[in-house]
Image (tube, rainbow, N blue to C red):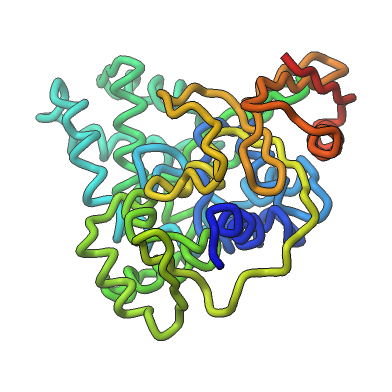
Length: 362
């Protein structure tokens, strides 16, 4: 019998938290996109799904452009494989762009000029510029934007397929400090990025999302990709012969062919709420809480402690020069095996950062 707990375990496997891959490039390609709003924390989201987490793994893929950090799917950054960037933008950007354009009303009559000058600045730059440096290049060309407008303009150009991430620039060696984001022309960074016809893209999107996130519902996919249910259903219909499904509590769950994986050991995972295990769903997100003990309240930028696919505690991460401290706020009393699983997860995370680990229960 299918249960929410079984679905959550299945997702751990599909997302490679219990079936890790060799490297960051494989993880991003398999999940299709990984939310990357906070680059330091999202680096662990990718590394946690590899067999031997290393900071230089994702960093190298971002530096040489195999993986891009760009706005796609929803109005925020995601890691995507360079080969997938263009077709994903083509199919998902049209519903996101109007949200950004409304924030550029003050400069709407100059958007074409601003677009051209940004592209010109990137083409002329000796190295991939930071956002501040792009702003300085615009000022030198007689165009001035405030900080928010510049951020939205660059996000808009990412969604239009003009701009994407350049090679990250390391500012200092502070543990846990992410390199600074830079910008480049998508045509230069991903010249081999694929283009697909819309119906083909909708089918590809359904297949790839469900392979890396399933089992999930049509509403989960619509949320994840900012698509209408009509488009999601078109994609599912086109891909249905390459998918399996089952019914659970009045919903149809779609997934890659085959049954659930063998029940894994009750491993622990320390993740942020931006992680795909949480952010990858909306309709059925709370398979993470089969017992119904997690308060349903406005999200905060806080982490999660998972054991056996269940959200057993909120988690806050603190980093100093020698130690990473994970402070837990349990949603119910934790057993000693659960605490042991969380401590093991803390050790993996700390080893990735090159620090000592401490787990504190509040």
